[in-house]
Image 1 (tube, rainbow, N blue to C red):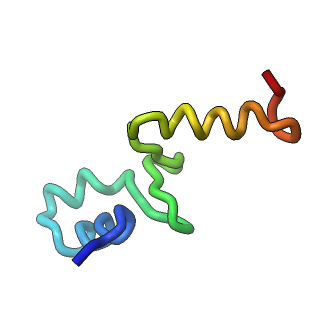
Image 2 (tube, rainbow, N blue to C red; image 1 turned 135 degrees about the vertical axis):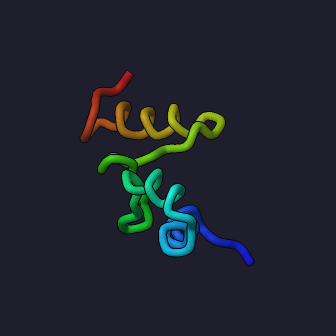
Length: 66
């Protein structure tokens, strides 16, 4: 059986030992996103962070080209 990160987080919050649950208080899932302390968490996957920055930074409507 395969679970998304958000599903795994919710399962851990419900079924994990209390010591683990305390460490998960700052994590939540919202609209399919994983949040840590209210900020979107982006894993350190090869090139993912750079691609997200490039998509938003270089777009004419939201950033500046070049």
